[in-house]
Length: 453
Length: 187
Image (cartoon, rainbow over all chains, first blue to last red; front, top):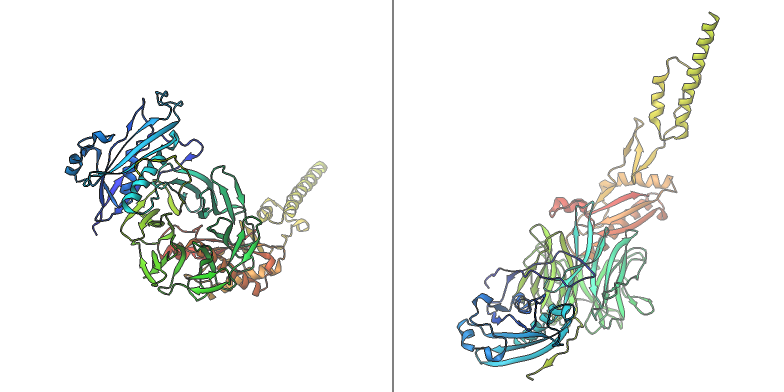
C-alpha cells in the first residue's frame, strides 16, 4: 500500500453556532487511503438566489468523501465544465478526467419570493444527482429540505447517500465526535469537553473544568451524553447531560471509584464501575428507578464494561488472571468467559455493531496499539502503527474507529478503518486531545424526495 | 544624687516591663519561636527571674498538607516527600518506603484528629479507567500498610486520579516512574 498524505482544510466562512463558545477545530490529515480509490467529481452546486450561502455544499461533500479514504476527488480547477442540471452534463468531459462518478446539484429558497439571502430566507431545498460516467447513467436523484443553519448537515446527508450508493456501506458523515482536551502545565491544567462534526468542523466547548474529565459516551439515541468528572470536591462522579438543553445531572455519588459508564443498547440502563464495596466492580444502574445491580464479584480489578449489541452480555477488563484481559459476562446467569489470550495487556474492549468482533487496546512488545479480535476465529489483528493508543470508538456504520494517540509531542485523535486500509489524524491547534466518542447517526431527518427510485 | 537613683530604678523598672512584655508575647502563640529567640538580644542586663522558658515544641507539625517531624537539632524536617512510588501495573508498597510510612503511621496513631488523603496515580500507559482502578489499588495498599502500623481507617481517605494528574510531563520511563505514585496529603 502506498502512503498518501493529503492535507485538506476548508476554512469555514460563517459559523452558524450561536450558543456554544468556539473551540479549536480539528484538522484532518489523511495518512493512508485505499489504492483503488473511486475517482469522483463533485461540481460546485448552483445557488439560485441572491447573496452568498454560508457553506459550499460541494466542498463539504468532496472533503467527506476524500476523508473516507475510499474516494479520490477532482479539483474544481481541473473541471472542463460546471454542470448543475442534466442538460449540462457532457460525459466525455468527465471521461477525459478519468472521473468514474459525478455529483451535481443546486439549491433554492423553499419560498421563491424570498429573493435575497437574509434572515428572511430560512428554509432551503437542495437537489442533487449522482451519475455513473462510464455507464452514462443516473444513479441517484434526491431532493431534501432544511433550515439554512443546517447546510453542513445537508451536505453530510449528500455524502452519506453517495457513499452508501457506491460502497454499499451506510455513511457516517452525519455524526459528531465528543473529545476531551487539556491545556496548560501539569500544575495548572484546564480540561474541556468538546463536540465537533465528524469532519472536525463546528467544534464547540461543552464544559470547562480545573479537574479531570474522561470516559465520555453518547446515549444510543444521540440525545444525551454521560461522562466522569472530578469537578465536585475533586472526586469522581458520573454525570448525564442533555445535549439539546444542556441540563446536567450527577447520577452517582459513591465513595471510591465512580467510572466507566456504558449505555445499554435500549438506553434504559447504565453499566458502570463502583468501588463502594471496597473493590472495583461492575454494576448496572436502571436509569428509571436508579437501582443498582452488582454484576461482578472478584477481588481483582473489574472495569471498562461495554454492552453486546443485543444487550444480553457485557464485556469488561479484569486482571483476575494476573494481567488485564477481556472477559464476557452473560447477564442472565452471570457466567464469565475469558475472550483474550494473546498478549499480556488487553483492555477497554468495544463490540463492533455486528457483535462478531471487538476492538480494544492491546500491548505488543511494550507498545500500546488498537487491535481487532474476531470472536469466531479468535484472530487478533493490530490495526494501528502508532504508540500509546487508547480509547477506540467505532463509527455507527462499523467501518472506521477513532482513537487517541500521540503525534508531534501532543495527544491527538486518529482514525483507522476496520480493514486497516484508511488512516487519518485529527490534530488540534492547541493542547492535548483524547477520549473521543463517535456519536450515533444524527436524528435530523430531512424531508427527502427520492426522485429516481 | 537621690534623683539619679530614682531615675536609674525607673529605667530598670521600664526595661523589666519591656522585656517581660516581649517575653509574654510568644506564649500567646506556641508556633512563633522566632520572637522568643530575639528576646535575649534586647536584654541589656541579666534578669534571671523573667527569662522566658520556650515551650516544648510538638514532635510533629503539618505544613501545606505535608508532615514534618522535629529532629535532634530541634528543627522541623519534612518526613520524606509524601510520595510513594510503584512498579508498572503493581500496587505493592515497596520495602524501602516502610521506614517513612512508619513515621506517618506513628503520627496518625498518636494524633487521632489527624486526617490524611491518599491520592493514587498511574502513569499514562494503558487505559484510563483501568489506571483509575490501579491508582485506587495503590492508595488502598498504602492505607492498609498505615493501618497495620497503628493508623485508624477513619483517618485515611482514598481517592484515585489514575493517569489524569501526572506529576511530571513526559513520555519515558523517567517520567512514568515519577507518576506511578501515591501522595499523602494531610487535611
